[in-house]
Length: 256
Ligand code: SF4
Image (cartoon, rainbow, N blue to C red):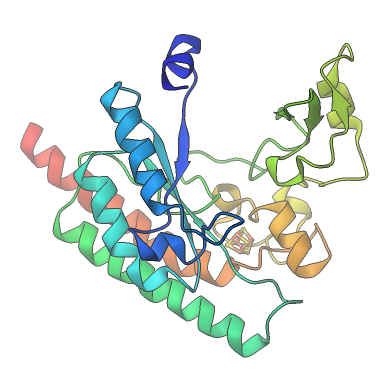
């Protein structure tokens, strides 16, 4: 598979949420067996063929306190990575649980910021640490869902988002699957941040764009409201910008 990926010029993303038992807390096979060993083996295999994987790290209340360990691991190997935050939605947890989860994610993130500040990387982490936000350019939508994004299933079905791969709205056999994706009004609706209640006057709106529309819908039943992760975003965006500033100053001094 690695050889085929390389031959086709495809990029590879692998989920690694923690090292060993930490990853296994939320990534198990149907049998209940943890997948951490297999994931690390897959990363090593890709690297041994010079295929550099992007590491996707999903942070939840269950893994947040161990976040610095996995970030150190990927940074020591100079692997590109990105964080995604996962919270139980408001229909499946009490408000107290959600607040505790938010606090543990923020505590984990603060520990990561301190670790990164102590040993600033040459690689920019401006977009690696901010979930679906992108702090490098102003934009109106969090992602390309419903606009310019296609997800293919093994049978040739085409869905709007990988999170809804079981609900294809087109197939590879039609002339213009993207036109059907754009016209679909039943699945995920990817609204402009300017249409989201709570976001319209936010300082961060053109960088955050209001978060993942599907996560917001699952948590609130609406597409036109701010992300359920908003408190986390507002707390970490200034910290991430500060780290990027420190990083630029550090390496600018060396090259001047
Ligand atoms: S209000 Fe919250 S979700 Fe909306 S743009 Fe600002 S930080 Fe993002």
